[in-house]
Image (cartoon, rainbow, N blue to C red; front, side):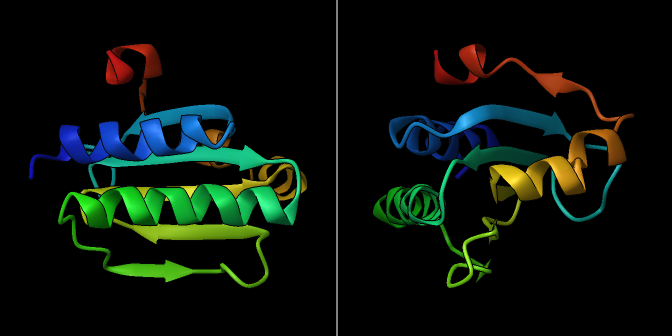
Length: 117
């Protein structure tokens, strides 16, 4: 499946669980890890887990390989590796602390409305 479809599925799943501040960074040519970083946050551990679970279920329903899922039990920073798309679901406090958008400041952002269209 193309990475844009994977990205669309992940963004929609995060949006469905009311993830906040959904940001997509275009990592092509910047990182060898993936083509896109999807970064979002929840306001509680339960919401972080709900967002991560929905992304996992949505990906698996479309036969997208889930390469790795880390941090689910602590629900402070859940990383979901969908190969070309790496999803970072943060608890709101952790997102401010790690500030991946600043760390990867040279990566262009993608309008999520275009992804969801």
